[in-house]
Image (cartoon, rainbow over the protein chains, first blue to last red):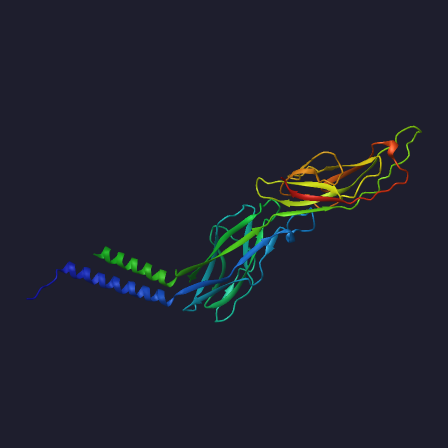
Length: 171
Length: 179
């Protein structure tokens, strides 16, 4: 027995197939453009009497910096496309006088990628800001931190913050 | 049906756009800073020699000798609710010349958290507070900063004075957590 689908039913089935194809195409495109970012290293600063500007009676130095290459970002990308890295922080125990800034101190290595910008300190806040941009794969892009706002007014304690890096592909 | 197709197409293009442009990943790291307590005390040198001089007129008691040329400089950081004090003491074998006592007053310059004078003390081998309620502060390290030290070699008993007697004492100042 021959059963004929109603005209409206065929159109719906056609539309579903179209949607499925496009979604699969998009997923494939997304996977082709896969990008990832990893961070290595960390910074743990101890501020004590050795950070005084002088001897007894002097205040703390206003800021301290991490080593030039204590922290590095690596970008892996399956296609040679442009990207940008943003940074923000989520404070744990923190003191309002303290400010954390970050800058890029190397171009990284490996791959044929490039990096641009980020070579001046950027104050890291809770709001995402562009740290630097680039294209393609790049490994070991060194970062340096600066902690400022130090003084005897900062109560002795352990302060921590989580620095979040996000990479996004751009056109 | 046209509307449905447009919606399907729009959704698919949006997904496609995300796939091409909006791929994003995130990584994070913890940054930790430890601010330690700081407790550092210095003194700007030794006072001039305190000498009991003859009185201007016969029959008068010799005048006390004084010096207020030196200062205590200190840097202190403490947790909330905690304070420090500066104590002074000399060695167990130290003493003032016969008939005299050595008196000391430390006067902070009034800066925030730099503490309050504990008033005049008579020097001895037992540590006594000279500045109290010091919290987080830095007095500064320049001349004239900090707590001024005023020494008085006081003639207590003129009949006990011994001519040409000389004593050198070493005074130890300590910045310490308040009891």
